[in-house]
Image (cartoon, rainbow, N blue to C red; front, side):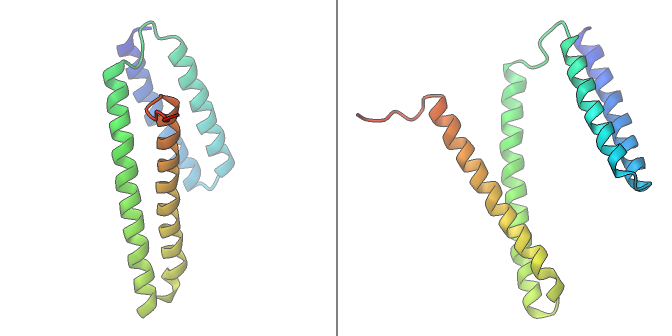
Length: 133
């Protein structure tokens, strides 16, 4: 299979899976939506095995790295700031927002800690930390 056909099939599969999961969640059939997602993952794996050319090159891999880093930075910042704002609002008149605010703030901290730990792990693994002995 050529890469253009692979991309076409992936787009069609994405649209179908999103529509199916939306419909199943709307109908409150949650277990079947999980089954649809698992089948989609298996289908993507099967499609990737049939591609004759590499799906990712160095440029695509670098773009993916940059997009992932920016996504984590933006989600962490927005979630942390939103959590602080919700906690501040809960101090005045919206008492029910306090647990949501704390959850968002803790989630942002966990996200940053996870990113930092994985960054340090991969940095050591790839040999950028040279220990002076």
